[in-house]
Structure formats: structure tokens, C-alpha cells
Image (cartoon, rainbow, N blue to C red):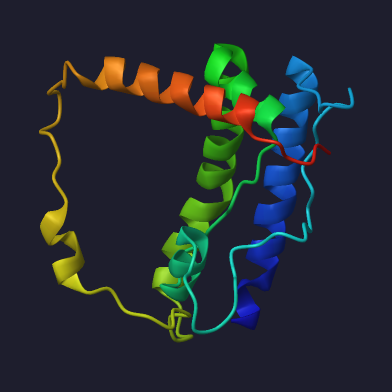
Length: 165
């Protein structure tokens, strides 16, 4: 709805500014040697058209949930996998904007008289196949699995020929 457009603009610009600071702070560069920066209005987006598959971002928006889709060049993906500092700054930028903008928006939106913007409704049966571990439990196999997954993804990235920005 029109009433949410200031929120959308603030979310985009806030994420852009915070993530740009994180990339500059850690010197994360493109293949051409420039510091990576966020494109506030990219050509890529989560909407692929009618009557086709939908991205998770598109599905979230259809449910009336704010969504962000990150497109990341290989250099950034590699830094996120290998540098705790980059990962921490990236995560903090997202967390801070979430707490500053999304949480208050969500609370205000819940009390709004304007109909909820979602075009789809949740089906409770979607959760039937979801399994979770009790709080405080651990899965001894998770760390080796995640480590191998990261290594495999980085190797795939190295072998993939993409246009670099």
C-alpha cells in the first residue's frame, strides 16, 4: 500500500548505507579492484513475472512481509565465507536496520486500519514437514556439514564464469 512506501524507501536506503560502510571498512573489492557498493535500484529483482516460479523474496511480499534479495559477486561471497570480520559487519548491518526499521513498522502495521497488503494467505499445512531442534540442543553433524557446504560452494564459485562488476 501507498502508506508503506516511506518504509520501503527507508529500508532500501538504510541497508544500502550500512552495507556500503561494512564493505568500505573491510576493503571488499570487485574483480576490477573497486570497493563493492550496494546498487539501490538494481536491474535484478525478485519478481519474475506472472504465472511462473517465484523467488522467496517475491513469495514474502505476496504474504505482506518485507523482503530483501541479495545478489552478491563471487568476491563478496568468498569474503563472507572466509572472514569473520566481514561476516560480522554484514550481519550487524542487517540486524541493525531490522531492529531500527522493520520491528517498529511491523508493530505499527499490525494495528493499521489499512487491509494487510498480502495477496496470498498462509496455509497452516505448509509447516507440517518442518522439523526443529529444541532450544539449547546441538547437532554434532552440523558443523562438518556446513564446512563442507561452504567449501563446495566456494569451489563452484571459482569454476563459474560470471560477468564481474
